Length: 629
Ligand code: F6R
Image (tube, rainbow, N blue to C red):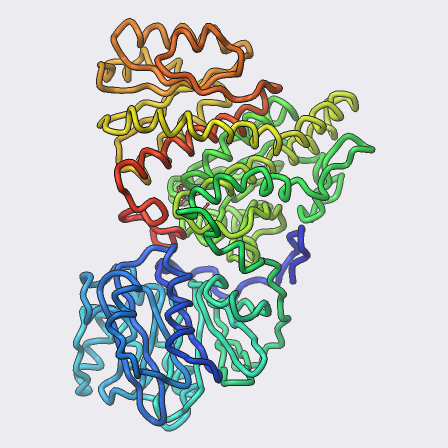
């Protein structure tokens, strides 16, 4: 389905109108290993998505045993009796949407007989109507969840064949789902279905897996099948079959996962976030790998699925993204405009999806998403595609929904990003934009020598980032000094303005310190009122035409007693003098400072969070893949 470094066109996904799904996690296992351990391990791997309760259903003989707890997987593990074992089972991490965070609301949910168990990601929109209908038939509900209607509904159709019952029940469900179901009377069998919420089948040898995310099973198998919306899988210990809504069997290709298990382990690092920050020289290298065409001083991006004529007809570029990916888009657009002279604009997915956006005939769109599952970005992309535009993806997760539904694109190959706060995916997304900008510039106004110089500098980015990472200890000391501040400002100009936004986002996400990112030039138009001795300002100072202007902005703040942390270029003595604390990055072509200047901000956020005792990898209220609105 996918080549290692390419996006390729895929068959259309059945239900493009599905609304939202949730950020919960699913794992299912059927095979000879110890099922409890496999389910717990799978759930542990899914922890990064964000959750507040968890549970498992184990099948053994002809009965099911359910254990559910509020809180972390460790609490679930502690609640499971030592002798509890099964031959097949399903597990779930829940991020509450319908009903509070309680043990009863945690999944799996069961039918009245206690023989049928279901885990569900997504939202059943007609659950009130279904519940009323099922209650009339005598079903007794115990939870406040929308999910509980699913086992009761399936049970209405159950006549000894779980697959048939699921097929009959699904058309009655409105909303989104990725589900996994088991029945006590059918040992080893798991039936899964997808509509708007990811589900992946893992094919082992003499064992089968089902999960919402391949990280849950990558320790056991590297062979996976991505389900499309509308598909149902029926699996047992050593077989599976997939059918679609029309009840036709679907022959699907088995994909090989290229991840190493080590890439989802912390290794010697205390947190995934630190590991991922320090992996950036290699992850950027991977994003660039095989894509630099030195002979022609340009970039090679085969996955775009656009020929030279189509690329030259592009008159403007639009980017759809959220959060950190949007910040990468903002920088990408500045670069495209400057380098390729293409009018470019990055839009917040949550805004554009509800606007009746104009889609110009000559526009080329990108959806940028690490996870490839962000609901706002996905639904915005579908709306833009409906209007006839070509939408390419810049994604990290191979086989994700955005990657599958886009018309082509660029995989960034950062490797699995487990920490909730995005770091290495961001710099790889930048790398993708730098490659695309070079390609477009060389097709337009850029001379060969300029292309060659740009390409050489792009190639040097991994070493520049490695050099920026050497300031680790200095940044830790700066974090210690300032981490008790209640508010921070991050300021930059030009391409460093989105980096200021990114620095503020990182800090608030994981340390819970209030932070605002501003254009340094905008300070005087309002935010300067916030300045006091208690509000540190983090300035990003390039050594280009904006340097003097930024230094003046710093002086305006100094004059009002605000402490200054400056991230500037090595050897900039004036910047060092004017700042209270100075963090140097290596000198480079100013167009490449976004790569190096984001590094100290990632580390500053990380060390502040660590100093304040925060859960760095799983900050409160956040999820890795925001699949709800
Ligand atoms: C920031 C962060 C979020 C994501 C945003 C988009 O550290 O993780 O702001 O960047 O939710 O996610 P993706 O890139 O998966 O679409």
